[in-house]
Length: 332
Image 1 (cartoon, helix red, strand yellow):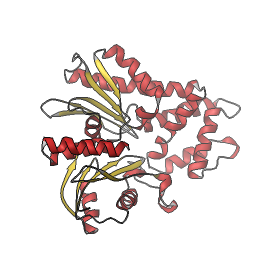
Image 2 (cartoon, rainbow, N blue to C red):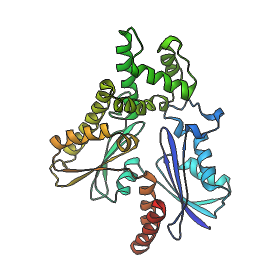
Image 3 (tube, helix red, strand yellow):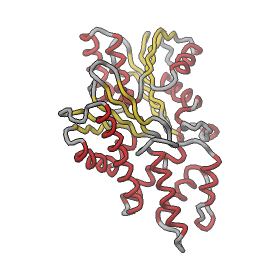
Image 4 (cartoon, helix red, strand yellow):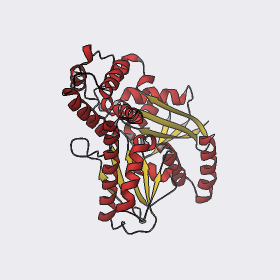
């Protein structure tokens, strides 16, 4: 193994890496790490962007990815800090002659085989882009939870907390949504809530700035909705409506609203895993952008990253052959 390509998807809650043989396109290894995979001493982070964006998570993931391998050189493609990735490799004695920094939305649209259209990624936060045939793009949202992130996991988690604790404040007994939240933080962070009080949770979240601690509640919210909670279901449906509105605004701004068959790639953990969010988004877009073709992507961003790197590093014929080998080995 002389030369490799490494795709790196850094998110708020996880780090996903894939190692590919540069000469053949075949996958050599893929590793996805989350908070619970880290040693206990590293699981708490004060990185506002989330545990997935910490140096500890990056170092832990790439060590597992290489698993004792020492290639001669590595080409890096990532949606985060290229400098950190290059520094780690050079410190490990691996040459890094080239790199690519791509947006999350770029990886998402490439993962589905498109070059133009709209991609929106809903993970811990939300980012979207409209891509034009000349290679340019218009980015929207991606301004953080204070002013944006409509429909992202952090926003869902925060709204689920707000709605639940508002109802709880006027209830004589612990409601099911509050219990689900308390149980989650006791299991994942060891936060005790005597007599069902939610104040220890509020104190814990105000003390720790890591957004992924709130983002994790998007899954709790979805579980509650599946168990019949109208409060949780409403929170998720509103998130889907927010995502649809962001896409509509982008399409109109970019003069794409009337484009027949406009590809709209719905990607990220929220849209991939929550049927309620996706179905709500689809329902709203069927009215506001009836000509669009909504595609629910469950493909990892590293898939799009590697396909983009292969296209950049090879002739069209070579890229096609290596892309075929890559996809076959990734799915296998």
